[in-house]
Image (cartoon, rainbow, N blue to C red; front, side, top):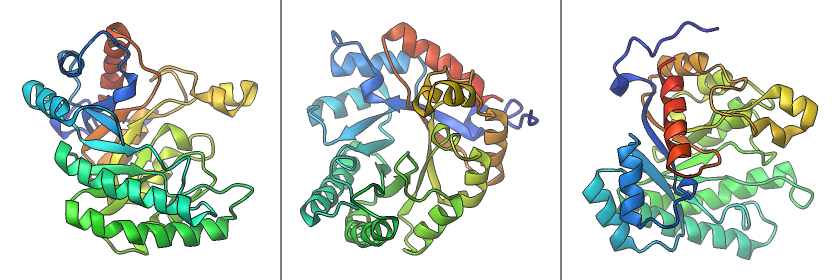
Length: 281
């Protein structure tokens, strides 16, 4: 086990310094938007990330943010899977571009600093080479909106069979030489085929935010890849102390967003306790 670098630091200086989660994890349907924001604030969360587009009234969300002090650090693009930037159909690619332009401007209204984007998908209809070329072309079309809004595009590593190496991911970002393009590093997603610390070392300052989830290699091997996620935070195979050290080594101290099955107040309180233990390792 890696020696802890976080337990001797004040919370504000730890690598995982601010904790958020995804809006869809709040499963309290009887509560209003304001009440949900207040619930998260009462449980000690610092922020919540929203999907884009969403059907939440903008004025209610902004009012809830301001009244509770719960930040909206980022948005998550909700179009990039059904209409990825690498789709063979140019109309599908344009739909994703348009959704990102809107999301970037919406993020500015929310006070968010990033929009999470899956850069592309490789499958039977899209080769790796084609995906690389299309993703580059389409992201170039989105960057002017990032400049105009002042909000950054954060590419995420998911099981999309694309940008599978941390060095390749770093190189893909560097080809644009743009300060508002970076990485949204998902710790749990890489455990299936690599070490999170290797990704953190390779991506370095390109990492804009962190997604938190757990993974069990034992469950993966015995029950299948997707079952690897079926484990609670802190109970899987992620060496969180090593992750914290790697993040500290690159100077990261910022947002970490929980992305696991949510639930009611009791469930959300338990998740906050679990991530606090992880952050302190």
